[in-house]
Length: 248
Image (cartoon, rainbow, N blue to C red; front, top):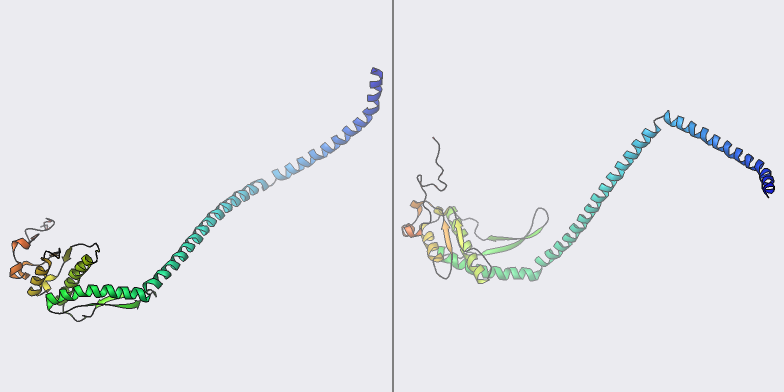
């Protein structure tokens, strides 16, 4: 049996040796090719250049991602702006519709009742507020409110302002609109004594619940208002508001 195996191996051995020789030849060719390629690579900057290209390419991909994010954000913002502009157009159509204009005029008529009554009591004249539609420089439609009085003196203009403030407070109360019930004023020394006295009488009525606060020189006050009970704060060269003394 051992003899049979020996003869079989002896018969196959030449073929195995030939196959091994062929594979060895192929391996040698591949080794020579590897050496030549390694030599070429070592003699050039290909690896270094390739690495630079890869790094630059990665940076470009990162920048592209950042730009795509920004573009998406801009697109989203533009979409929101367009949506808001559509909403504004709808609101404008509502605000400048005939029904809304009618509602404005209705409320304006109510306010003018208080305005005319207040001005009649203070000046013996009836003031009124009017409204006009106008267009701004940017093309936006607006309602413009103004009085009919354009040629008032400085003192009478101050009186008109006071009439408006008092009238609005009374109007707001009648409409259950929250508002402040104190009025801060300046330059009231330009007004005539009679009007200052009339304002005091008007706001002091218990039903009005209005406090009228004005900064004014004492010698400009009418005698009936030049009383201690009407003073909240009195200032002078010796009694300054912030107690700041002028340096030497």
